[in-house]
Amino acid sequence: MGNTSLIRLLTAFGSPEAVLASGRAVLTAHLSTAQCDALLAEPDAAMLDAAHAWLEQTGNSLMTLSDVDYPRALLEIADPPAMLYCKGQRSWLNQPALGVVGSRNATPQGVRDAEAFAHSLSDAGLTIVSGLALGIDAAAHRGGLAGAGSSIAIVGTGLDRIYPARNKALAHQLAENGLIVSEFPLGTPPLPGHFPRRNRLISGLSRGVLVVEAAPDSGSLITARVATEQGREVFAIPGSIHSPLARGCHSLIKQGAKLVESAADILDELAWQQRLAPPILPETRSDPVLDALDGAPTTLDTLVQRSGLTLDALSAKLLTLELDGRIASLPGGRYQKIH
Image (cartoon, rainbow, N blue to C red):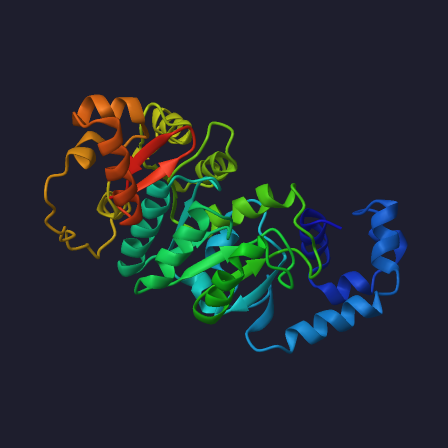
């Protein structure tokens, strides 16, 4: 039985106890035959025991619509979850928040931008909400945790699973200092249809959504569309016209999303009272290779023309800069400066 059916039953009967006390004849006015069979069947004892054992662990809890600390922001959306499984400090759910989403296959610069924006916004008092995916999501969580605020991960699996497994350490940090939330029962695997549903919660909890990098068919654009439908602000960071991961952001900007170049742009748009101090940038000496990189992915041939170096000298210099963390080597023999 899905969330819509649960909400319909709670609206009609007033409480879970009243629903379960009703007979089949009454329930058939609200449910299909298969749903009635599932609701009236004996509960799965093993699943119930597993849920009780999970709830006994420190930091784990189950939140329902009737709880006084149910997030007010989610009550504003069309399809609020009837239940939320929570791991961590659920008080973050009622703090002012901003969603930060983007590509799983992010560029090094995109990862740095997501983490830096999230860190600054967290310092300004906004909780960073994202989806615990690789790439931009993970960077946003790291930035949120590093700032004065914290971060919330909305996931598309049961909370007894960590997906993707590569974010295990990050998930433990979120459980310790932030929050992980799911509307899906324990044991739920990472099914494709679950992630668009969790996206509505990312935007629903947030005052706005920032898209850092996104391909034209990215799931991040779904989050942005839902955010617009929910009356939330949408922000996008522009990129190179040659980068596929900039096209989604550029499309959003054409449709009316706010183009942002700094966290202060977001705070201004939200009329946020706290303001950020301008960053103090370290002085750097001029470097012909770094000067030849304009922020967009650049081929080796283009760098030879711009820098005036021989191919051998350029290759040696690129290796040194990459080892120093100043540039990143990208697929297709291209390079990008890391700010």
